[in-house]
Image (cartoon, rainbow, N blue to C red; front, side, top):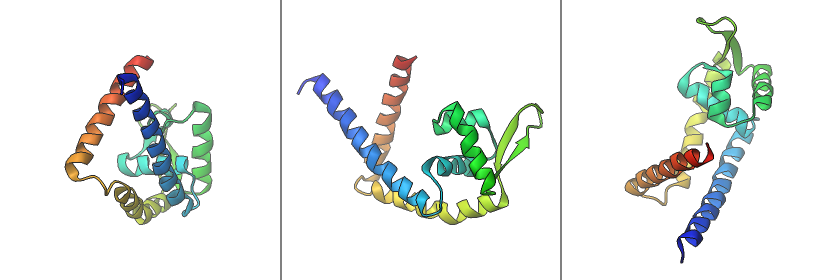
Length: 146
């Protein structure tokens, strides 16, 4: 098999695997009346604390036009709120509310368990190697994109 064929097969394999893993995550989010983007925002805030909207957009990989809508939906669900930045009053940070923290404390362990189960076929060394290889490809692909 040529290098080009191997690269194309790797791309197809990554795409199919990503689709399957996304379905697991979407179903998990849906159980809690969230879409996958809302869940991703909550997860980011749960682990990293309050974030500027633009940072959330970059980390969750959604369009600028969509992030406001997603945050608005989470505000309506009383899971997040907007807080003025202490350093720059023109900037708003998004933070989990007490209800948002409570929700994530309740559902994140099950979410992590479901995703861990999806990778159960790999031993610890293989999982570490997969993470290294994905990071290597991602870093290189970003340089090509720029």
